[in-house]
Length: 378
Ligand SMILES: Cc1ncc(COP(=O)(O)O)c(C=O)c1O
Image (cartoon, rainbow, N blue to C red):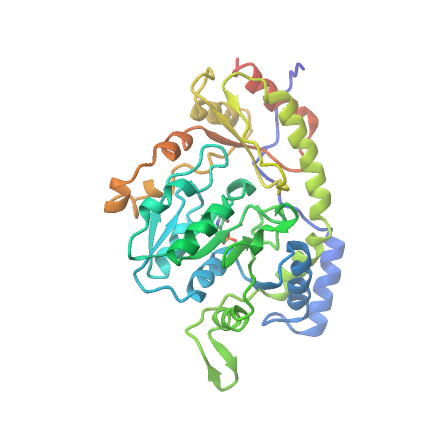
């Protein structure tokens, strides 16, 4: 492989999945004709039902974005005010912020070196009489250790919440990832494999949560004269739902294309000294959300150097997740943060680089990226 090209257009870490404008126009026309723009309309309800099949879960509640969905997920479990939720610091800001916005305290736990999800073996020593839940993130679509987390939750009577923003359609031995724990959030943000521009959903097994979540998403309003809960506005509108319905027809094809991109990267990067490619466990289906690599100490450049060199060539990789959440100004002075061991995450946050990853990535761009990494940017 020898490429002597320059990359003229900016290459970002992802490219949104977009339905054809003609199909969007038809959907919008239907919405205009119906004059029903939001508040659990026809397209909303259809998408909710279709997602039950795709995600293999008995209950789906749609939301206007993943953050409000996660906020409501935590709220729906009626956890004691001020109690602690053990979570991962290796995630997007929304995860711990949703805990804080609920008046609860995020307690950060170190991560596992391969999957980079919360280290279930380190959870127990963080449990106090104030702990009420565990919130795991299936980061990059790598599932948390769901079995061990379930055992711990049972032993200490804790609730389990999952952030599956990166794990759309992931399954463990054929079981939908959204059926683990008490409740799971998916994000349909434009950067996600399956998107409705902005959007998200909650999935859960417990039928008793249906009414509660419906209320919390809609100001607590049950009927014209009955307000049951202190709710918020989390409703997905009809235009979002229409984009979701169209993208639902396209996401599997996009996954197939991303599988080929992954194959190319794996083939050309896996033998490079100093580059590690995290492996997805047997029996787990890949969501194909991100392609993270780990740039180890024996690679000639640091992760930050590789990031900068790529940027100079118009390749915009991402340092997900640097800084880690326990480094944020709003969390770093917490006593629990100061006392905790973050040895794995504090190492990995300087080493992970997410490479451009989407179906339409051209082969010569892929060759260019791989060659730069093979030659240590020389
Ligand atoms: C891990 C994680 N959690 C939560 C969110 C928030 O989702 P949204 O952007 O749909 O609000 C995102 C991304 O956007 C995310 O990556």
